[in-house]
Length: 227
Ligand SMILES: Nc1ncnc2c1ncn2[C@@H]1O[C@H](COP(=O)(O)OP(=O)(O)OP(=O)(O)O)[C@@H](O)[C@H]1O
Image 1 (cartoon, rainbow, N blue to C red):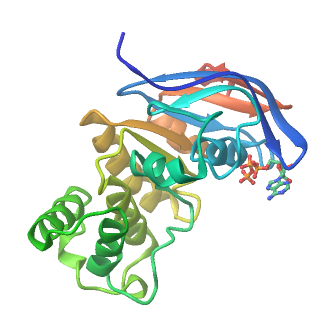
Image 2: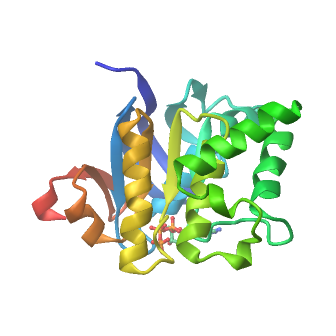
């Protein structure tokens, strides 16, 4: 069995003092692609936020990319996030700088200093998502699907052990969603582990994978025909 990348044991997810999900037990191994589904307000984003330490883990045990979420210190959070690639629904590119500068900003913020290494790394990740030709464009000069590819490239910069994608196709039309999904599939086939929250049942049918569902305060695995 491959190494565990994420393990939650008897976890309760809170928003402030409100429990959102209880008795959460999840074990994700290296190389897996896992969907997280559930209707609006069921707790998908709250779970994701707990995983990247935007919400504290207050109850239960959780280890993610070798960080213990219960004992995590504020100072550890940037180091944890360096081992995670996080992709959001709304891309979150910086609007005032071009694609190259967006990625450069992340590398510098995460301790890279060598210009040649940074240039090579940026070109490599943009090439992997098919966006190298847009490297000098501003975010507003490329489409939503292209912005999401850049956001995925940005998530790959520090060679993350786990990619957390929260509704990555939520703002995209069906055709563009499939194109972005193809990029994620390819990244997964290259050995990377991905946990993707989604509403998009068409994608689940087209790209079947292990699926966890948030419903009525619980998280459980579902088989495809019952989703
Ligand atoms: N910042 C917050 N403070 C307090 N409660 C919140 C906060 N964010 C979300 N909640 C509540 O937590 C519950 C779960 O919300 P969450 O955003 O995790 O659901 P979701 O499944 O991701 O929904 P969606 O699919 O709409 O993104 C909801 O009842 C929501 O109102």
